[in-house]
Image (cartoon, rainbow, N blue to C red; front, side):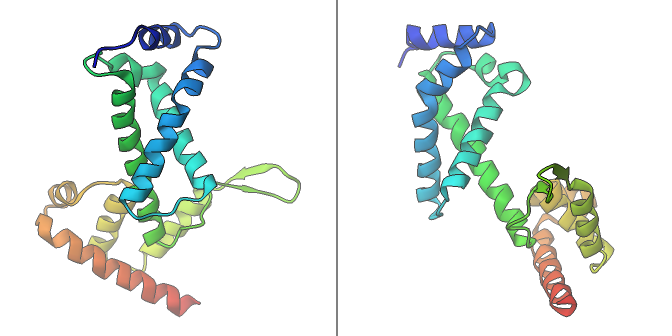
Length: 191
């Protein structure tokens, strides 16, 4: 399907940073983005809260504007813009869902990147969260801790982890399973 003139104009306006262009873009494609999120939810048998849907939509829109609209700059016009944005949105959504699933596996389901103090000011917690993760990893042997770091914090796949650590790819899964078991056991002992 050829690129519609309205879409070409919208892309050009965004790339030139014209006032109102981004708002027009969001208005035009917000429905598509939400549709993709709901499709991913249904396809993976997941239930997203309204807040999750909003967060995922924000991640998708951030991916589009990131690096001065790099996603729009890469668009070649071979397909329609809605088809292209569907693929981009799905990839971002799936990546974010996988990231959240990995965080949940480590027991950080309700972890927030920021906490609000009693006086209403925002206090960043990345250092405290990193210290907590490192404290948890001390309960593991060095190899297990390295695999967990690479998989859950660096988001590497089994092949990349195996290559980086010089271990067979098919041993990464069992190491992760054992590490998770050890982390659960250590958490239960602390409780």
